[in-house]
Image 1: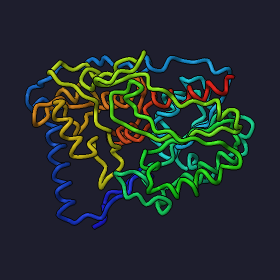
Image 2 (image 1 turned 180 degrees about the horizontal axis):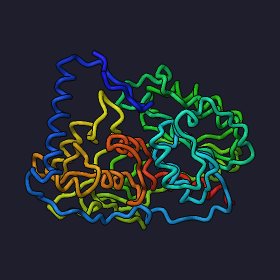
Image 3 (image 1 turned 90 degrees about the horizontal axis):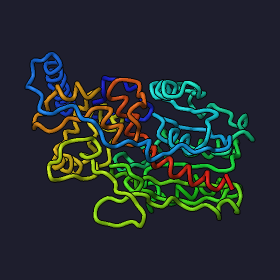
Length: 386
């Protein structure tokens, strides 16, 4: 039975569920809404946790660089993870393109001086990118990952949301000195090796020298298990030979990195009391994927177990910390808020996500952690600055 609720996200692919399954989801939503209403009206259980003061400050991981006027063009900008990291690495944006109106509003609110195209204007399929030829040093973007993600149906080029051909077209029309394309690590798996060759590498091989690297967010100070693949291309062989993939700057656990810093665990990063155990956050999922929109960031049973060990409640994420404190979780664990989830993803506290809670969580969950984007963009800046 198809969903009766129309989606506003181009990344959402509703599933046909049985009426019994849909009724189960409806009951969960009704119960959650009633519990939240009672809590915010002061009719629920007394709060168990104080409002937290995070110890993790992502901007410390991204010292602002002077790019000497070098420019960037952003595609599939989402909530701005790549855009922020690229900006902190010293690039100034000539334009950002994003299909979701709410994400475009986030970018405009965060940076009112940026030229942001969103909604129908942000659909890259209708853009002539030749107008930016000679005006862009770096083109970057993360085409929708749902066609390749382990959490999706992995239909690759058969998925209508596959936008890698549009990314490649933009590179060929713009001809930047360098480009960075980002996606889930599954795209680098043997399952999609033929796709990568046919749709990414081969079409650009005559003009760019491309290297591929998989990076882990916690290696760059982000308190989350999150791996991403980056395709980094340079227009000249000399620049490609000069490029070095970012080296880890942080470490989690007992492994030692010479000169590296310690990555915080999730509880420490959020400023929660010491319970004798801490760990990295599981990979947070986008609320815009799956059978329905949700305010949960869980992506697996294993993730649920880790959150339970951390005594953190990842379901029904609240809009703000005061609401999260008032809305006591069933098991008494600490309930996350949107600012907390943004922090887990490496966004600074003042990044102004726009939209309903599920939509802001979708923007966060789909984003590249800004410190990870910063590391990659900085490595490109190092080459372009020589």
